[in-house]
Image 1 (cartoon, rainbow, N blue to C red):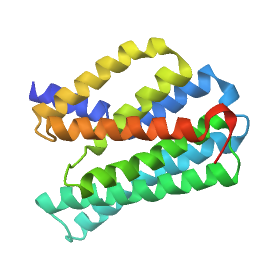
Image 2: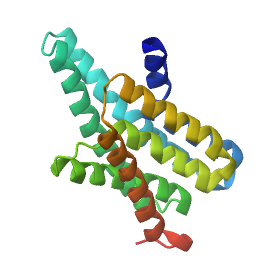
Image 3: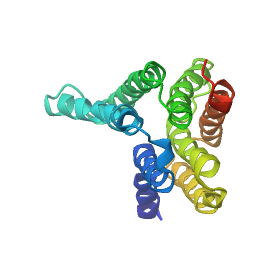
Image 4: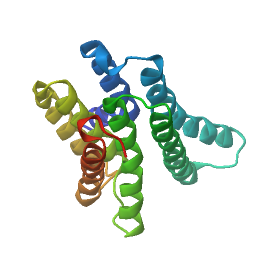
Length: 199
């Protein structure tokens, strides 16, 4: 069971789910990507830029700067910082480049999710970034692509929660607040960019 939980944890890495969501959106609704910017802004700054955090942490590990538990903590800290920067850049670019409504909602949801996660963490609630990164793509698939995706999404969601609890990576409360961060961010983005309008 431990090996299965680790496999599920790897499969449900937020970055992988983000790319899977973008891939499905691209091949089911090309209207969401009228220009190259609609595709490459989220790919570069939501998908790829946060990965630099793990590369930097690995370099520090090779240089004997961080080891053991400190390495994992450094990795998590860098991941949050790089994600926050990448999501902020994607959000700003979606506004300045006037990307279409769907992609703007996508980038703003990720940006707002970091804000909600930060607020919960400042309140000592320790919201799970992993749960947030899983919930966001699920909401997008069900809302913008097809509600039928709710079936596999619920399965992925449940398996991810189980693996996190089984491996003792998070508590139920942390997972709930992480998922709530994504839900609140998505709702806020919809309200701000409804009917094709922008703030």
